[in-house]
Image 1 (tube, helix red, strand yellow):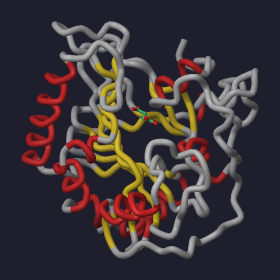
Image 2 (cartoon, helix red, strand yellow):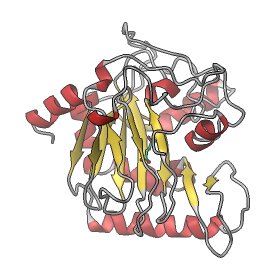
Image 3 (tube, protein in one colour):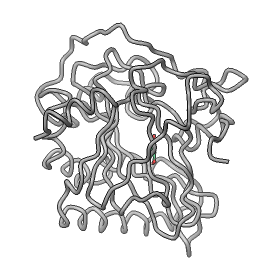
Length: 297
Ligand SMILES: O=C(O)CCC(=O)C(=O)O
């Protein structure tokens, strides 16, 4: 499915964008379900297990930062990745055995949708090997003004930067002054609705507030090779107390092939995302309650 050039690009730079991969029908169905979820969010006043709210959310003007784990809310979101061209592309990058770890819908509404401070996903969920990545499905046109995902090419081969604040607490974001971070190297990942981005879990990335008048909704899936096991952290999917529940959940999230119970270990840099901030409910809460420094002031 991917060309040799795309695979080389991913390995070298840590990301690729595939233009208009999803069909208009897939996008239409997805948006329809999301509209229903947004409607439902009108009933709540505080963030909960499903919705993460912007500060100005109200019944008359619902404003979310995120819908958490949409694939656990509606099967459509699981089928969208499993039965689409996306899985074909993933097999070229991760091999045949692929496990979905979690999903999230970042809504980034017009006129103020929240920034995501610079971070490496790896800092949140280190694994035994780094065949771990995130797919971003563009559910709106993404342009330079509506807060595109930005990445630092090649940073997936560098160090794992500290994501702890000056008090030592995990805040889910790097210090923009870190000597290993240079904002001038950042490039935006733009594309038409239906395009996807794929970024490596160790790649430095972030995105600014959406100050424009057009929404930037993106659906993210976090996946790994099925022999890549989480170490610690990963609060969004290792939340099971019983091995039976864990096994059931993993099997239901298998995108392709088989789960391996013999983790493949690699000698790669890892940091443990502890001690936790007061609210670990989403990256937005982690960065806020962890008092992360903003690169987007
Ligand atoms: O929505 C974005 O632009 C960034 C997404 C991201 O990095 C995250 O949610 O962890």
